Amino acid sequence: MSTSPSRVPTTARVASLTQWSNLFHPARGVFRHPSTEGETIEHLDIDLRYIDHGSDSHDGSSSISTVEPISLPGVCRLILRGAEHVQDSDERIGCLSEVLDAINPVEVQW
Image 1 (cartoon, helix red, strand yellow):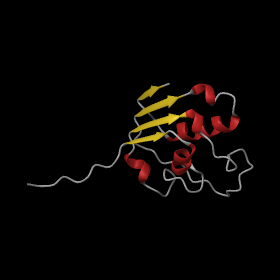
Image 2 (image 1 turned 180 degrees about the vertical axis):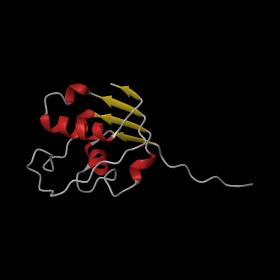
Image 3 (image 1 turned 30 degrees about the horizontal axis):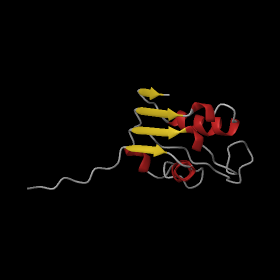
């Protein structure tokens, strides 16, 4: 009897500000290069209420000198929830566009 290796999670869900920060923060997000944790993710589920880098925004006022690119090469399914929470915020739209630029999903649910 052989034991199979433990399966690496293939889904990432953002349902809080803490989760967003842990995954996508410009300086320490686990989906930023050189980390390889994003390479196994196939399904990305984002609640748009929680897109926020706070003072670490990408509008030029960031105190972070270099921002590593997001690495999510295997995402094939994207779910976005709560679009009304992003439409009036340039900062949130900027953060979301960075994620969208890094993926090439086959299926998108809005």
